[in-house]
Length: 285
Image 1 (cartoon, rainbow, N blue to C red):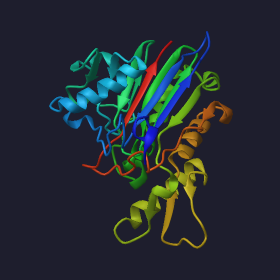
Image 2: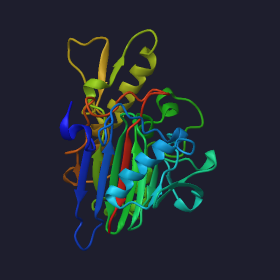
Image 3: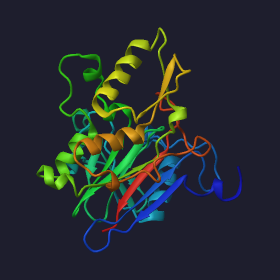
Image 4: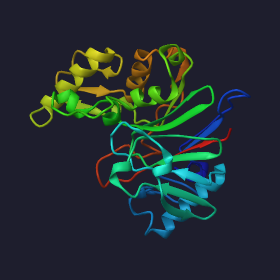
């Protein structure tokens, strides 16, 4: 890998909403940036890591992000009220706002004009959803979309089955308003990089996940072939799409053009301790 691949983000996208809808940009920085290689963007040590703060500040400056909401994602499927994010991390001219309490961890935020949302995924998708003048940036990994307790039939499941449910609840007051929601999905690992095995270690969970998705959203998110008896591959953007459609959002309102990233330029192994990408959404208007 050489040339601009070592300097440019793995993904850049700009949406102009015109006079009536939000305009925004999305930047995803992966393994390489500004000539450096093998970068880890995880916010876990950002308060102690000066070099990381400088790198994140550089990306923020490039898109004009100064107020950045960055709650710790916790697979709660909640969209949080940003006034509870009170922990400041200085990034040059920008401030990263984090939660000081685990109670305020969340997977999405409502964004006002001029505000940004950031997370550091390891292959998890992110999405932007808008309706009229409202806009949400969200983390949408597998367990943001499907509740493990619901899958396994356990007691006391979380309040929202999916981040899609809480997003739609924030953006629409009634079923008719679901039809005007628009969604853009970004930065997911590809299905071929996300196998789920029916083996002794994972078989029960994989089978219940497969059955749960098939029962609720159909076969589209489940990539399989007749000759595969030991596994299936999960298509996260397709799952997001089917969930929004089930809530009444028209298929043509859901954009998957930038939904997938390559493991050549971005990290896709989301295991604990593995390197992370930087996902940054800036609402411009």
